[in-house]
Amino acid sequence: MGKIVRVDMSEGKARLEETPKSYANLAGRGLTSMIVGSEVPARCHALGRRNKLVIAPGALTGTGAPNSGRLSIGCKSPLTEGIKESNVGGTPGHQLGRLGIDAVVLESLPQGDGLHLLHLSKRGAELIPCGEYKGLKNYELVKKLQDRFGSKTSILSIGPVGEMKLSTATVAATDTSGFPCRHAARGGPGAVMGSKGLKAVVIDDEGTARVSAADPEKFKTGARRCTRAFKGNAFTQRLKDYGTSILVKGINSAGAFPTRNFREGYFKEVDRISGEHMKELLAARGGKQSHAGCSTCIIRCSNVYVDEQGSYITSSLEYETIWAHGANLGVADLDSIAWADRLCDDYGMDTMEIGAAIGVAMDAGLKPFGDSQGALELLKEVGEGTPLGRILGSGSWITGKVFGATRVPTVKRQAMAAYDPRGLHGMGVTYATSPMGADHTAGVMVHQNLDGELDPHKPDGQVDTCRQVQIRLAAVDCTGLCLFANRPIFLNPEGLQGMLEMMGARYGVVYTLDDFFALGRKVLRTEREFNLAAGMTRADDRLPEFFKEEKIPPHNVAFTVEDEDLDRLFEF
Image (cartoon, rainbow, N blue to C red; front, side):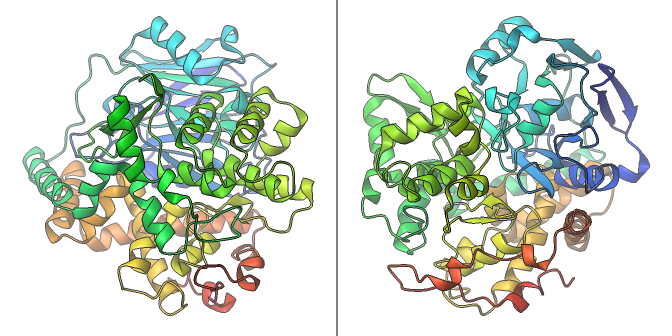
């Protein structure tokens, strides 16, 4: 039986308790959503005392399973006003799992405006005042914490944007190099952590061992099967060569690469920000195009981006960020995009949400599209907390309201990611219906739309397929496996068998595919029920009207899935 760390911020105390039977065998997104659904009043203020921030490693996190280092952070979102799970890699999840911690639950609000850090180790949990770190950005903060607690610790932290409780605020996680460059970003979990007065969680797993399975031999067999499936998958091999930036030219060619705040689906200067260009650039500069940034990673989809002198800027420069601060803003300069990523990591803000907010503001005339230096200046305003910065830092929906914009690409107040729903109808269904808001990871439909299974420009089959994908990925988020494990598992019978064997061996049960899908349905129902109780209706499961009214070049298509079809998604 694992442990839950309950942290009462009003009392300044942390206590350990046995995980209740009602939460037994739940992990990752399943546990965060279940705790939020059971313990947080749906109508409460997201930054108030009754909201809770829940941090939970996946079921396989902390074991030796390949690509199993994922961590879920859940709460009522200050951005969407609904339930939220934000998923992050790096090393903290793995170390939490090794400590036998099923979840950390932050409760109530602090007395006064002091800051604390939470130290977790084999010896227990301790809440420590840390007012001296107030206002520090993530890189400086993490360096000070590593000097104080040891370089082998893992750290979750917030930057100034989290302290300001802005809705773009992230929770940063250290990677295998010790940098705060992985983020639980979507939905503003950093703002909730900031409201609790918690600057950081320091995790020290010294003296622990990998999580042991109830059936070790069966677990090893399953892990070997998954390893073979991951290494034998063509897409994961391309990720190793190019990282997620391999998607840039492909999505652009499909006419679904949102350009200049979703005015177009094709960026003419794509070659200057492509994965192929970045690979050449990093090879010349001495950067790393393939890098394992997360615990137990064998895919190595990360990179280490360096400047012309070979000095570190950021890791990893990924597809979504390249889009958000590149084509979305009309910017065709990888160095500028990399510095935008570094600023977002340091200040602690979601690269997608803040990129979308700047795109909306540019569309409204604040800065011209293509003004890379102007975009960096706006990011600095957010980090410094100027009035304009606080508007942008509150997200794209608020920015659109302030600037009187009509082209605001959000659902449930959360910005869309790097796939235009007119060019990829399946992603539009995910954006519209996911309990998380416009979150691409909640139901990735790219391959189904581009590999010939479904016509990306027609509604046929999109809702039924998206339903199954959302159920499947909700369950994947419970396992602790990364998103890129999804395809090798479900396209390869050996990979699927291996995953089921690992899950069963972990708990000492016979675990079937029916069990897996039942878990995904349970998670989605819990999240859906919370949102309905929070006041959301079917009207919130819609794309902004311009996606149906404005046809996008180059394919001259609009989003054509009917509202009544979207309403069928939760019929399960």
